[in-house]
Length: 174
Image 1 (tube, rainbow, N blue to C red):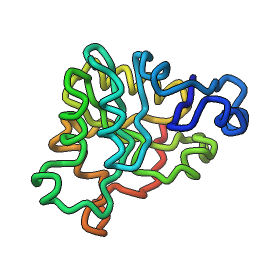
Image 2: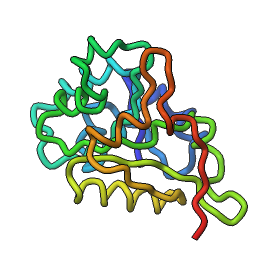
Image 3: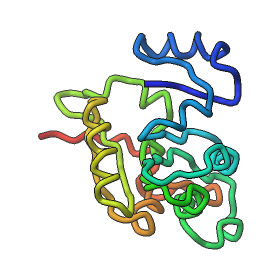
Image 4: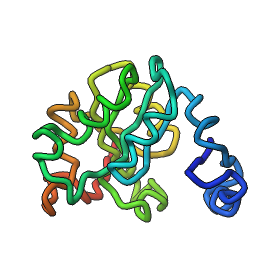
């Protein structure tokens, strides 16, 4: 697993070490060569990252952003993930990991015999399945919400309002 930011990789060493021994810092240019990319940036920063590659075909981009404070008019009344998907033309975009704060995601996903839920939505079933497998490997329980247009709005913040599933720390029991 790698971590990248606008800062040089050397500046990310302490953060990578804090996350875990298998995390390596890289430049954005190197990190976007991965098959699955978690886009965990402030909402409008997605446009800058999208410009980092000439071609996003074959990539799975997991949209972790939230559009809190962005008006529906600025998004052309589209779900924020649909806007992000347009910027990453050719990529298979999956919405996920955005409904819980980072400090909750950093906690043990195993809770009282169950697993913490990660909601996913995407228009490409294969890409969503690949992200669901990643969610499983991380110890969480993936829960599909359908296509981006239907599922993504359930886990976004808009106009200083929380949609039904945002910040819901749910546990799935087998």
